[in-house]
Amino acid sequence: MEILLAIMIGVLYAAGIYMILRRSLVKLILGIIILGNGANLLIFLLGRVVKGSPPIIPADSDVFQSVYADPVPQALILTAIVISFGLQSFAIILIKRAFKVVKTDDLDEMNAIDKDS
Amino acid sequence: MTQQLVLYPLLLQMFLSILLMFCWRKISWQRVISIVGSIINVGVSIWLFSYIWENGTQIVMAGNWKPPFGIIFVADTLSATLVLLTAISGLAVSSFSSASVVAARLKFGYFPIFHFLLLGLNGAFLTGDIFNLYVWFEIIIISSFVLITLGGEKAQLEGSVKYFTLNILASMIFLTAIAVLYGLTGSLNMADLALKVAAIENRGLVEITAILFLVAFGIKAAVFPLYFWLPDSYHTPPSAVAAIFGGLLTKVGVYALIRVFTLIFVGDHFIENIILIMAVLTLFSGGLGALVQNNLRKVFSYLIICHIGYMIAGLGLFTEVAIAGTIFYLIHDIIVKTNLFMVSGLIFRIRGTNSIRNLGGLYADFPKLSLLIAIPLFSLVGIPPLSGFWPKISLIIAGFESERWWVVAAIIFASLITLIVIAKVWASVVWKEKKELPVRLNFRYFDKLKTIRKAQMIAPMIFLSLVSLYIGFGAEHIQQVSSRVAGELIDNEQYIEAVLGKEQIIDHEE
Image: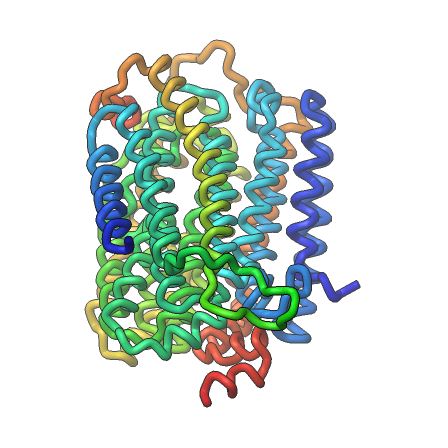
């Protein structure tokens, strides 16, 4: 399971970075989304994957009876997902706006900044 | 009353932004609330600073969860100093933007977002939890995205695409680094991490994590190979926005670097050398970049990069004197850079352009104003009694003591280039003969503004120039603050003890 997840995270990071390096704005956004998912899965994996043991202390005990799944990574992922959701929706609006104003989705042609001085 | 003092600057900024949201369309109300709120914020920050100065590091535990389990806020002298500086530049920019930012932009929530940005900055400076630091960084970047795109001009949108991509990439790398660190230690509290990271045997993995943090914060701080987003985006938004970005946003990256590399990843010579090489190259590339630019705000953007190099160099040398120099430079740089971008905004309002070639004759038309502009410009170079001079002494002494001559050479060379750049700017903007520029229609020139608006633009510059002069002439006091901060940073057990208490450290050693 860990090996499978590790390979998947590697593929997601590679695909995300490849997409960010493309010149199209849409691919840029897709790359950011994929990279974000890769990062979230990485937190999940590095918090140790444990099967079928929720972090709940039984009523008749004061401590955990067996190995338990660490709840902190899940809280972290939840936070990270919400944040990246907000950023990505902002990004989509931004590139739509940029496309309308600049009339191109090619990053190489967005060079008005270098010309004006 | 003083128990939760650490949280007051945060709560005040949050309260202000929510209050401002309720006056969405009433711009004149927003102006008043923002300026009055910022003045109160300066008062609260001074209170926090003096309390920390007398009583030492204070912590607040969220929900009374004892560290290392809950989220904590820690105010040591470094954090309190930076919160105070944020409040000072926040007040200046708040007053400046109420006069210089056009009403069309103010109508779309400029002020609420501005105060959210300050909230994020304060949070990042005060938090003692690494994941919480990530969350504050996200609050900062999402507010800065709104501020940089507000208005939607062509150059602005193009600049913000670059700004946005690189910043999101930095956040992803930061998140990856946190994930690896959590996997290694199972903790997120910075003081607890300091103890646990020191005990890890697999140093290779620790070094890789450190490099991930270095890259993530390096993008935010705009150090050598990672700065290219900055000069492409900082000159596009209104100059009030550029002032707060130039003054504070890159400094959050520097703060995070200082915090992480003095507390968690300490004493690794490989990392220290990498930081030094980055610093030297940052000094060179920023300085040389500034030399060839023609747009005034692009020149200042490159100078931001150049001077980040000084602070990083101090961090890389890692002696008490060097860190004191870094902190002194940080204090001086926040005030001066905020002021410089406001100066460029004022010149833009007077002449209608920021192109150095077309500017000129400022001294003939506004002699008093030119003298005011001279203060931040020459403080930046560090002509002796002014503020930029003192921290360089500490840095150069530290360079000599650790026998790293190339760092000393780079520091002196960068000062020289800064001097040349500033002399060039001064000669062509202030002394050169005035050129006749085509009059721009529908442009609010400075002399057409109402007197109160003029005062709102000039007053913050006078205020920040006075602060700069104080830093220069009262260097003894600032040196006292920075030496104390350096002492606390070098001896990181003080921080750990303040957060975790004595028993836990002894437990850990056993």
